[in-house]
Length: 313
Image (tube, rainbow, N blue to C red; front, side):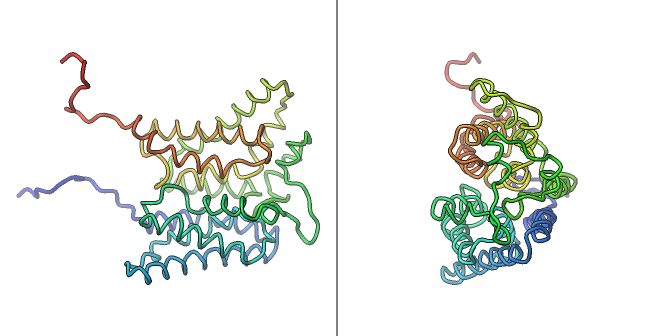
């Protein structure tokens, strides 16, 4: 007996719920360190982000009479990703606005999970950075403000690398500890939720382009400077948790590498020549918009397809 059916004939066992759960688990180490380092307000901001994203999705689906989808954990992951991109002492209404924008404006209005054309959490962060610049760049802890490591690098200073690796410095809640981020990234790779193509090509190309731009500009570049670029800011978190988003990243192997290189070039451009010290969020958002073009170029032709006009038969 043969079972005749349409393709695909081989199906992946992983479900959306399982993948989202793994991503949430992977983000927990860096969030836990953020709460440990910055205090309970970081936990408060995280809970507001998650609650706002979940409630926004439920309310939108109830109003529009759509099936409730929050049990796939995608709204929870959006809230967690938004939280790691926010300052620890930000006012409570900032994550509320960000969560509503991420879910309603970027995700649900375009059809829900799988239809959004850019990463909802990063789109929300960019929206907040543009709308509330001073609040989003206020990294004061216990009333004491200090420059982030990227700002120090841009000013010509070289921060302590061990401090950067462990995370005992100012910054966003989930971007400070390179060690915690690497633990989460390794978990995703071991669980085969992500491949190394995007993170590796993104990180390496960022360092290469940072080096090239500085050399062309006549600036001296040290190993400590490049290591600081790697360990500080949102590069590692962006490479493992955000650039690898299934919906907004290429599906082909070549496309993933090209995508990573594009992200690296734009991140290096923003960091070295831009007015802001950081550029990961904007780079990934722009990269998301280029994904359809990347896939069109890199998707292989199926066997038996017609040859282009002018080719010999």
